[in-house]
Length: 169
Image (cartoon, rainbow, N blue to C red):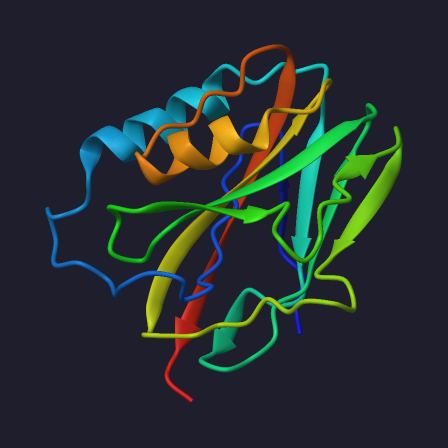
């Protein structure tokens, strides 16, 4: 298995199957794509965030492992844009794992023992954006905004994204 890694203003995309399927060409929410792109472009270059995945392609049902690293201490947030390109979800922190602090120069391996990330189908490509902020974000506000397709990070942060393809089992 090959590990994919892109840092800085790269793109982290993982199909977790939390939402729909791939949409026909031209049906993705251009505003959502623009908002994610804006978050990536406004990330502080001094906050280098990197993401490594266990594989660059998985089959539906396969476990997905991610390793997020940052050169600066902060709080990790993972956002998923569904494979249909119109929905946004907060993947981490979550109800089973809220320990999202990362020390400078270290990495955070996800998921941990009490939860699982897996490819749930259908086949296609989804996207996840990893964001590391200097200060913790208000999770209630973050969850509400995410459900409305908004990503409001606020103060200084770093971000990265990666692409992963999901195929039928």
